[in-house]
Each structure stands twice: as C-alpha cells, then as structure tokens.
Length: 182
Length: 237
Ligand code: SF4
Ligand code: FES
Image (cartoon, chains in turn purple, yellow):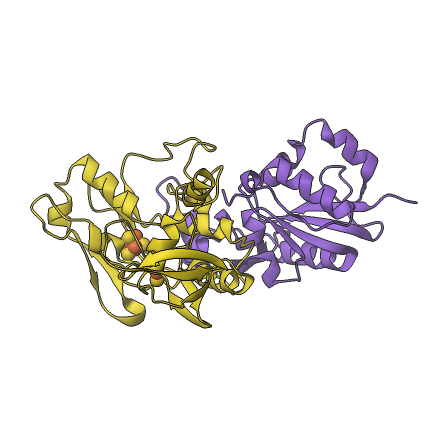
C-alpha cells in the first residue's frame, strides 16, 4: 500500500510554523517512513503532482497568490489543517486589519514612516507582485478547514501528535501543555 | 447556627447552608465552575454568564444564585461547557485577542478558559476591532481592544485613600473603561501590578514589565484553570 501523502505551504506568515515542524527533530526520520511529501517547501516541489491526503497550511490569506494557493490545496488535499495563529486568525499580518484602509497601510510603510527613503514616492506596483487584499483573512473564512493546531509557533509535539493521530485514523486529542495560542 | 440541607451538583450530594452561593459551595467542595467577571472579595455582578449552570433545568449564574433546598445542578456537562465556550468565543471575536502579542498571555483567564473548554477556533468571524490603545499614563497601558467589560478594575482598584481609579463611560456598544490619569500617574508599582492582575485579560498592563515570565512558567502553562480548586477535592477524598 502506498504511503499517505502530505503537502505543506506557508502563506502570509514568517515560516515559524514550518521551523517548528522541523523541531520534531529525529522523528522526522520516522515521518518519512510514514508519509511521502508532495508540494511543500520541505522538498521544494512547487506544484501538485498528485492528490494528497493531508495539506498543512501555515499563514493567513493576505494577497491574491495566498488565495490561489489555498484554493489549490483545498482542491488537492482530502484533509486541510490550519497550522498556527496566522492561519487560524490572521496573526501578526492581520494587525493591519483594523487600520482604516489598505492605502493608509501602504502609505505608512512605503512613504510616511520616518525611516523611509522613497525619492519617487512610489508604492510597490510591479505587475509580478500579487495583489494585496483589503484584509488578511483566516484560512477557514476562505475554504473549509478540517483541523486547527494553534500556537505561535505551534509546539513540535502538538504537530507530531496530531499527525500521528490522523495517520492512525484517530481523533486529535492534544495534550494540555502543547496546546497554546502563543 | 443555620440549618444545613442538601443539594446535588452533577449528581454529587453536598451539605450546604442558606445564604451561600452555588459558586461558593462548589469551590468549597473541590468542584470548579468557570468564572470570569467574578473575583475574590468583589461583590458578584453576574455580567459575563460564564458561570452559568442549570438549576433544576434552568440556566442560572452560579456566582449570584444562592442555594435552596432540592436544587439539582448541572455543571460539568457537555451542554453547559458548550454554552460557556460560545460565550468565550464571542469575546475572542469582538475584541483583538492576538495572544502572541499580549504580555498577559499565559496568565490570561480568557485564554485559559479557551484552553480548558477546548476552543480551537471561534465559530464566528473576527471583528478586528479598532479601538484606542492608551499609553498616556506613565504606569499603566490600556488596550481597549482587549477589554471584556467585566468591571473588575472599576470594582476592585482604589487609591490608598479610597478613590476610584477606573470607571465606565458611555453605554451599550460604546461602553468603555476610563482611567483617571491624574490619580493613576501617582500610584505605586504594587498598585499598578494589582490593576494588571485584577484584569482577567491583557487590557490593563503594567508598563516596563514586558514578557517577564518565561514560557512554561506562567500561571496556565502546565495546568488548566480551575485545577487548584479541583485539587482540593483530591486532597480531601
Ligand atoms: S480593563 Fe480588564 S478588568 Fe477592567 S473591565 Fe476591562 S477586562 Fe475587566
Ligand atoms: S462569573 Fe458569574 S456571571 Fe461572570
């Protein structure tokens, strides 16, 4: 029987959740016995090459690219997990959500802040850049998410225990000490 | 001496006296009922409803309801815990409770209740509230986006000569705490800490304290909120 396939991605986030994933240390060897990876920064596969069993999402939805990647994940994965505060509630990037408008954020970041040197007074406008959204959205407000593993970053043991439970067809029952919002 | 009588909490028979609240008798007997607006030595005010229990089939607040003969109380049931979780969720979405950026994290009662009641994500969408953060006071910082309007500060914090430092202004949706900056700028460090501690969330923070407790050593890092009360039961039985 072929192994279950896992895909992972980092949307609007700091990559901390993936780093925490690697904090499972030598259990990563057990993990590669248990699963195969598909699209993921861990193996650098950029596009889905097959349907996956578990998709792990780090980060919220802040721009058009995040949106498309998340939709792709929903299409290609049977189970989706929101990993970490940014995926669950927007996290640090969502601290812009209660500002008046996207313009005021861009102005502050690129024109008005005391440390800015921007002689031509331009805002980022290269067409290669994804379009920034009005707000940063938690993943479950964009697609259906099946499980949530909180933390900033989520504890490695939480990620490990959850994956092992899912792979064995059990419900995730996190240990109190590993289940934290920070 | 007042005569004792019996009530039931989750099927457990307890011997109680007139005048005691359900919350008191539960706590005295090692039974935890979650609370939020309630605080030691403050008159209960029943505003958060987190302590709701079912008394002979009807939801009542345990912090203000006094015991009566023949009471059968449902506390630690799926239904009541679900109800409490919904209340906690609404608090999370109405304010900004981005825990990693909050100095109260790990010592926060709202967060601890969310852990205990196993809230993974609120079932409502976040409002990303945009209220003031008031850092004008030299001793205290107030983040109105975190305030859950429990009034514990206004009820419990006074200057040494008995003056109120906190009060509430406006009504309905616009209700907010206000701080008397003239009084508050002269308070001692201990008083500032007391104000931070009485606040169940991170709405009142003592300045120049920062993230002082390492993760793993904070109040609710290792044991769920209410464990101290439940331990009482283990010790006795
Ligand atoms: S500031 Fe804190 S103690 Fe005061 S009402 Fe708000 S949440 Fe309660
Ligand atoms: S603790 Fe009883 S209503 Fe808040």
